[in-house]
Length: 242
Image 1 (cartoon, rainbow, N blue to C red):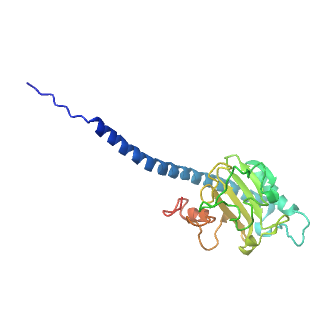
Image 2 (tube, rainbow, N blue to C red; image 1 turned 90 degrees about the vertical axis):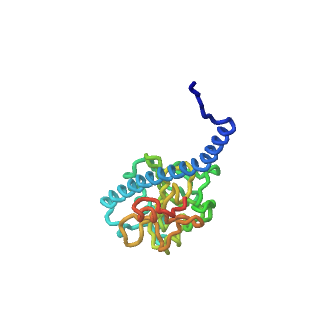
Image 3 (cartoon, one colour; image 1 turned 135 degrees about the horizontal axis):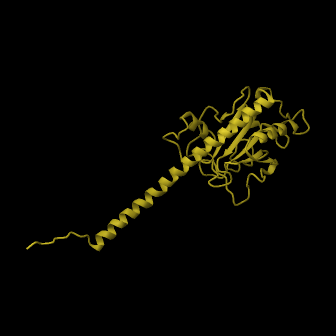
């Protein structure tokens, strides 16, 4: 006689196993999703930066060496014609929509600054009052929506609405470029989907913002995160705080 011995799990054992699998999933899936999303931001950053660089090179062909660009000067000029000319020239080469000048409110059709939209610095704090050049996140910027879904805001160091942004002047920055790789979509956080680039004095290339020390840390603002990423071969450093 052949005995047909079958080994089976009890209901309790099955439930325990499923419970363990569920706990592991709860702990790991958000981490995997977060890493995947940050890789999406990284690829979008490459595209947005490439779009900006290509427009900048074409603008150099049109306007000449940026070191020789004559921009607005608060003590000399009565209007913003010089800055506006450069901003409109960028608009011809940035593929997307140009929304013009934001003024002191920082708001245009390109950038949503309604109360429902919260902009943050890297440490998670609200960006209002944390920006080192102005109170509002997009104060006195010229704004563009890219066809890729991102947005770019340009801030001139000297501006009729703000006079002079001394923090930019002191850092030897002529023009600041704020790239939001997914536009108004969340998380709207510096170092994740928002990155900073500059055109510095006596230079002709747009470079990632860097002031000698990286602030791309969990407890800081994250303005230099693009610099850390690019210097790491367009990859997140191992200690990147996302």
